Length: 154
Image (cartoon, rainbow, N blue to C red):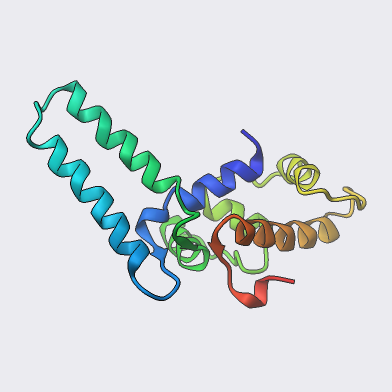
């Protein structure tokens, strides 16, 4: 799994905790409706291994469908910082963002992420690379269904 995919999964995997709809609550209600039939279907069926597997599949599908619901990246990262117990500035630092998500923020990992995101500058100039990474990551998260604060996008 690529580093971007791990970051995306760390944020979007929490999508069920902070989905945002774009106006009418249709996405939220359709998510609730989708979850309710899965629960009611599981309850009347035998509480076996068979009934345990469909809810897991449905739960996975629900959290992997952020294309229908916009994921509030800011609230998820703010919550991740609180849980970390550290003073992290994810809004300005790619290192702090990765630490908030419990990821390895080493130079090696950031260089690999830079390759994934198309960085063509000098990888030895970590300040420029880190600035690029943060902006590129915010843009890519936005393109993948994340609601990113406007001031963090180009």
